[in-house]
View 1 (cartoon, helix red, strand yellow):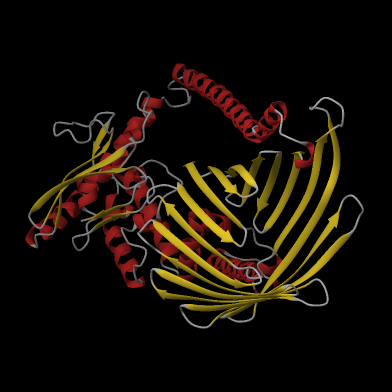
View 2 (cartoon, helix red, strand yellow; view 1 turned 120 degrees about the vertical axis):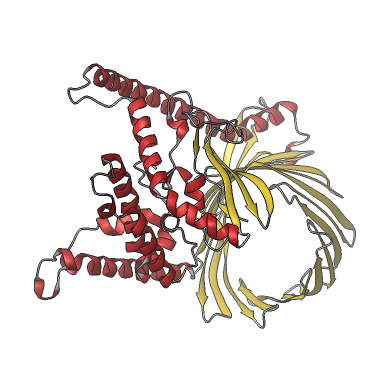
Length: 575
């Protein structure tokens, strides 16, 4: 265990996240008896390396207990992690943090003031959560047309604004079971400036754990459009919706059934009568191991019908591609959509191309939280005649521009990062080289010396917990519980070898894990295992950096021996 800034506090005390406060105090007392520096003072039976190793382990144990032993700080850590704790501790004393009477804070008051800061931050977080309950939603659309110039080359364009549309809505949480939305929308034509506005109201009420009622009314004229729907889960695998829509043109009644046919296949059936009658049948299939999906829908109306299909390919969590062919009485259509999610998890970019036999259009949409900005553009209208091949090529070129630009930007960023890394590495090597030449004169330590220091410290920590590991092993053997027979941490190709003798590739951590066994269970979180006492990263030396280390465990439970291998950031739960 080197000088790591990031480590899991629960791992430091060998606890699970649901541990009680008494378990936290008991774990701290047990580990203090092992690692407290006073028990390893330099004397006849101890060395300076043992003292340093014990001090480093005890600092982590003490820091973990200081946070987890306080209800407020523990709740703050569970929500924001160790970085959040450091942020709260880094807040400087201001006027609000002064002691009563305007006295300057002293060391004994710092923890109390830190708790006050944490409480204020938590109250602020609750206020932000309440604000998010408003459910602000907004959209802006600016549509343009870039049709060809009459009696001219196809690739010459004439640009004009088609329309602009805006909408905004806000959600009010009346109670836990009742939510209301109010919004407005406006649509303005670009040619003559004529427009229309609409006022929207809707409510969603939960009538029970399986039933909800939604009512909506849109006012855009003398008579509002009313929409009522009742949704109920009749079984865990089937949902039914009854809906009635009332407008100046008439009334439509519909019934929709959505059953799960298999674990990954869901069907839908909609029957509608009244002003807008029809039958719609659909299927949606999703992959259980990836984000791929496929859906198909066929609908029938009097004198019309349409068949639509959509295939979704998601090679990564931040990118997806959808292809949706359609066929109707008006002809065929094809829509292709690419979606890119940014690293912040709040922003998405969609770019779409729509092809028909006599038209082609593009649409670029930028979404962030509840806001959406859309910019559709019509490149070839239907009235212009059949779609020429040159216009199709231009549309495809424009459609590929956003992903090509993103790829180019990513490539430039990667190249710049690689160049900066090489420059920093070269500077570091120069400093290390000068430090090696100036050894004995206060120069920088050699990389091999740093690795040797980390290995020596981890070895001393394993020696400190050897007696505790033997005690735990004796208890587990007596009850036929969990016994760690062998555990090695390091190179994936060497950890499972029985004759592995460590070196720069593998370190034996059998005692380190055995000392962590409690009640025949071993639990490690998803943080790097090199932060645990007795561990260090043996692949941190030169020539061992191409892969992350792994943890191999050979254990016996209930008289049966098993072997498992875990990644460096993979949680461990045995048996």
